[in-house]
Image 1 (cartoon, one colour):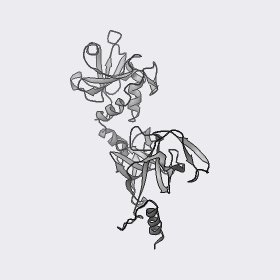
Image 2 (cartoon, rainbow, N blue to C red; image 1 turned 30 degrees about the vertical axis):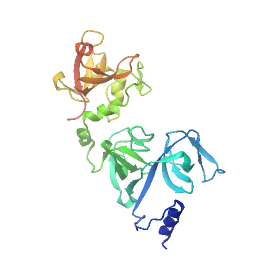
Image 3 (tube, rainbow, N blue to C red; image 1 turned 90 degrees about the horizontal axis):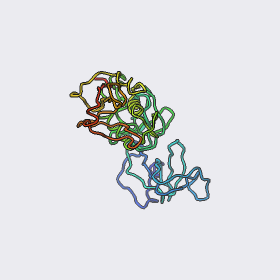
Image 4 (tube, rainbow, N blue to C red; image 1 turned 60 degrees about the vertical axis):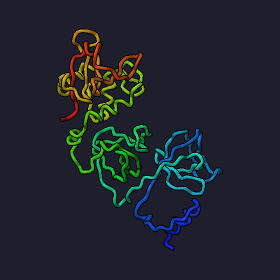
Amino acid sequence: MNRIYKRFFYGALIMGFVLFAPFSIKRVYADSLGIITGDGVNVRSEASLASKVITSLNKNDRVVCVKLTGNWYRVRLSNGKEGWVYSKYIKVQPTVIVSREADMKRAYITSDGVNLRNDGSINAKVIATLKKGQPVSVKGQKNGWYNVVLADGRTGWVYGDYISLNGISSRGFESRLNGQSVVEYAKQFLGTRYVYGGTSPSGFDCSGFTSYVYKHFGITLPRVASDQGNYGVYVSKDDLEPGDLVFFATSGGRNITHVGIYIGDNQFIHSSSSRRGVIISKLEGYYSDTYVTARRCLSE
């Protein structure tokens, strides 16, 4: 019996089944997402309780399950290292089948600061931050996310909006961006607390929030709201589209003191105040009275 098929045959027996239908395990390969089901779960150097503990994981941590041997999973951690976890403490998600290395497609990252995650989800752990123009190899795809391999061998997932499969220029990529992408990204920070001078998810002020969101799309805005009010292209209130910046004079007069991101349906998202943090508000009443202008910062 061919050595590769023999290995698979005995592995199938261990897992309690025999697969009679032939298929080529040399043509495809797959890694499965594993979710840790308890706190303080040990990752060991070998598939044995007597082996050295490499690290510990907590509930809902994610790993890549490379293979199953007996009651142990060989897993790959977010830092690329591998170890063994007892199968009782892992919930394995459905396998994603991907092409062999020879069939991988060459692709390029289209913006700076793009996150490589350990699963195809905005909530998954960030493994690395990628640069504009960085080459990657695409293994597979699911739900708008691409499973990619870096030049150093690390694997992870990148959202499809930030990958070019045909070598288009960065300007061409920006023209494909739409305001709804900006809105969806901004919404994940709903509830984040307001911090004066804050520019990160640990706390935003109004312009720190808009700057952070747009930086994710490779666009660097001026730091303060009054300067952001001169960035991009003027848009009339009647022509607002999702992703446009909207500006307000909350201290009276016409001097810009506050900024948010229009999300459609006469609403905008913004880091409002120390009491409310990042919220969605109607562009009416107080905000209609203090409205000053709007700017469009995405390429047409």
